[in-house]
Length: 598
Image 1: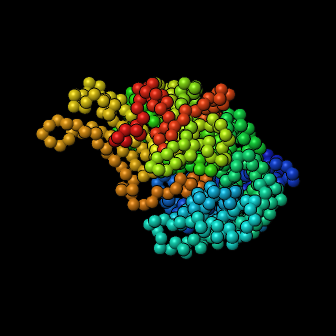
Image 2: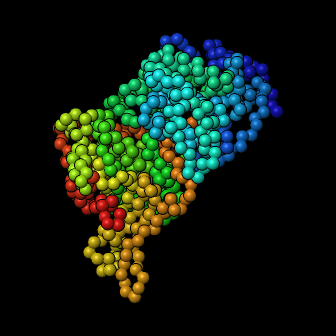
Image 3: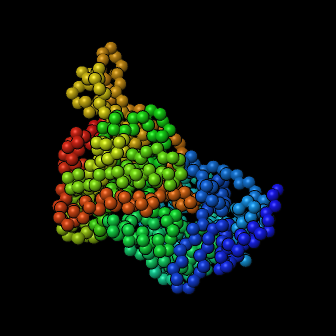
């Protein structure tokens, strides 16, 4: 082996800043120095959580990520021999040792603390805690993990565990040791009461976490399940008082990410006073849904679909979201945002970007998000002519009376906030030029559904036109991806009815998930939490994605509010305002979810 001259070693040492202490870097990851009363950014160190049976948290580079698309799998880590300082210099891998009293971050010593900020709220109780337990049940969490609830409510650990236990359920196919697993999970749950803007409260939380971390290499995940107006206070206090001293710290931020381009940019700027971009995990739970994640698999791994995925063969694409209930007492929150901000600008637009993007270079998070941003930036700005808005009114059906949106006591009288919206969007690039992407989202409609419908063009010179009848739209092929409920993917084709005559029928090639797969489909929050722990950002929204999305919708939203456009009324439980049908007809399209054979 070549010997490095002593002069080269001395020059390397001289290049190290004199202000750097031996504990200022952990495995090559810079560590900020704690300065009292000075905002300190969270450590940008990264951890890859490898889900396997009783998985341990492992320190590694971003290249150590594993894909969760194929489910948990075991990963073998080969032992690394300890190099001498001279060997480390020669291989370019010299790293400073951990500070005194801190254990090396091997697989037995790393721990993850998951802090749910806003633990007493509905989202935490209905989604976050059940998702964490499901991950624990499936042995997908690290061996050493602890869950902390943080909220203003006064509560003991025992009371908190009792509250969490009432939200937990076991997998349908794994109920044998359910009670035992629940007990094991609850022993790892602790509660801390404090104000979201109190530095002292987060200092006390930090002490509690250090006690349970027991000197191990610590990683911390904060989930902000709180209103957006207190995001920054909570992040500031956590960054200065409760971030990890030797591992990574990440923050999951729930929507809404502002109300328009300006407020979103201000929120991002404020977050970045305390966080690096790769520490911010903007969650859109629709991206974690099984059928949305399967969208790219369906397209890029099946030869029959990828060549058809363009303006040459696709006539229109529909993104449909409907709920069969109204605001039901939560109208005060909803009225500040409306259906466009609540559903269209995030859930449906993210699905559209995934659907329409070009083939990414790889499945790496940045490659996928780069392609999504290109789609969003290629989209034509929305105008009032491209949109129809509505608001549900009271309706009596079957002897039951359903209230209007403005009957909700939490909604201001005379509110013009839309509870329904339909829009026609266009992507001005070579693949999608001229293809209408129709979005429709609403509350208090006739059913609950989320789906993607791809309507293909007519067959040129179709030999069977006489057999198909006059309605050629019914004769075109349609691919339907039903995101929820009752997940399915089916393709509508034309088929000959058995018999001596030549009569054609429309049939479905149907992949019905409940019939095909016996395993219960994981909740979207399970996948997203696991990805956040593992440092996988593919299903989270990057800041430039968010900017592009708001750029598309902000001018429209401002025009609606400044001109005080009155929404078209539609009865509670109906199919929505009539204007939505005229909007589709303008582009020679019929909504696919309204037919008899939908």
